[in-house]
Image 1 (tube, rainbow, N blue to C red):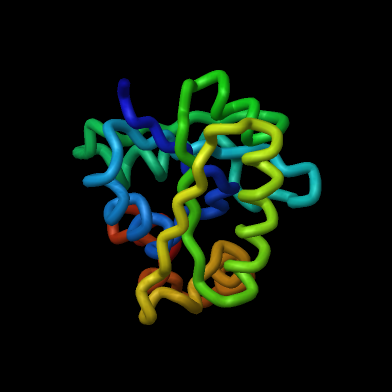
Image 2 (cartoon, helix red, strand yellow):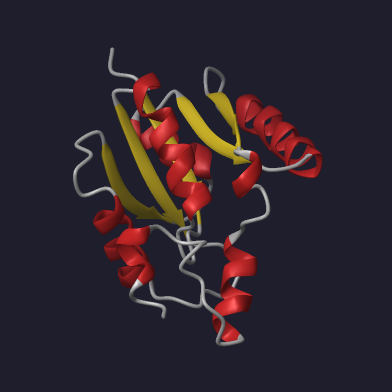
Length: 155
């Protein structure tokens, strides 16, 4: 059976932290679906099409990675894609507590779905899409915080 992982998020924009999590998870799975969810609690800075294009550009040479969008519960998307693994990156103890709670709820809703947590590298632990968006809004340089494949689009 194919080992499929879903890496959900808004990726608004994708950061070096996101890309690092995916690259480090590649040896563990046959396929990783980067799943851009529409979150009713978040207002996106970039269009869905732009985020998909950026992710495709970052992973253009990775045959195991594909990007899709979805609405609704992540567990329903995982079930539809026959994914048994949910991939998440964690930067802090607060992230861990949040992800642990969500993992337990997801497992209750879809038994057999395993959440795989990958610790961020220390040098990437301060990077989040929220912070990157604030730097962009403030006209700062974000090339250190986004993958090199898309950095030119910001500065």
